Amino acid sequence: MPTRTAEQKRLAEKAAYDAYLAACPTRKLLDEIAGKWVSLVLVALGDGPMRYSDLSRRIAGVSQKMLTQTLRVLERDGLLHREVTPSVPVRVDYSLTPLGESLRALMSAFKDWAESNFDEVSTARADYDARTPDLTIGPGGAG
Amino acid sequence: MPTRTAEQKRLAEKAAYDAYLAACPTRKLLDEIAGKWVSLVLVALGDGPMRYSDLSRRIAGVSQKMLTQTLRVLERDGLLHREVTPSVPVRVDYSLTPLGESLRALMSAFKDWAESNFDEVSTARADYDARTPDLTIGPGGAG
DNA sequence: CAGGATCCACCAGGATACTG
DNA sequence: CAGTATCCTGGTGGATCCTG
Image (tube, rainbow over all chains, first blue to last red):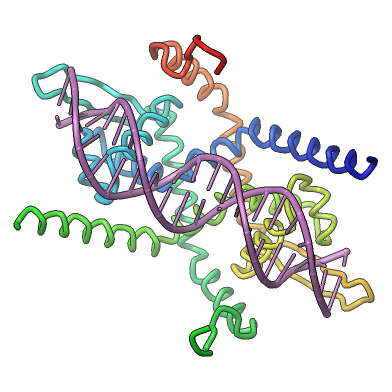
């Protein structure tokens, strides 16, 4: 089956590309900060060290799982420091490392771009939506 | 039930936070570029205009759905321009708009950071993994 | 050639309950 | 207080078929 082989070849190429993506530092960073909470933790910690519960309140709608997971990942990547104080009720403080601070700074540049070009994008969207027929608008009945 | 009310209050706060996130330009941009293919399309188009099939080959492991979807979103946001040539086999060329180019430049800064700090992150990870007991290592069994 | 429509797998993310 | 463990859902990303 030559056609089958061609399919296999395509899949192999894809797998190779996927591996390439997985190895790409930029992609890894992208995947990392893509999480809903990463940026929030970063900026929150930008104000200085915070305890777990402080972060939890500051960030509001975050579950323990997500907050903990986010903190773990960032800690593992050396972006933030975790300091445990073995008090009676255990106390844990989180703070940005220089590396984490540099990422936070990068996010600022990012934020700056987003805010600067926000209405340009909005305008483009409105324009695009105006040009598009009536997709997704569906005025008609129950169907 | 006061406790129930407290729960409701928490959820309300969370919803508000979620709305805040949805409205945040930075988050929108983040969600936008977080996709696996956005950055690739951007850099590919950085070399100049390309046809749909060119992009498809260049990016390799991308499905039509994902490529089309990515292109649509970027077009809608005014990041790239779509030009249709009503030939016999329809020809469609994509190119970066100035806005798209600026985003691509931003991604470069991003990439620069990632590559510059890649081994620092790697080191941190290795160090972290070395400190962690034997979670996920699971020596036993066929797993 | 370029893309629409559809069905499906996977996993990020979240709710909940429990622990030290 | 600061997590851990588990179950569940929704949306993203993908395979496949079909069209103009």
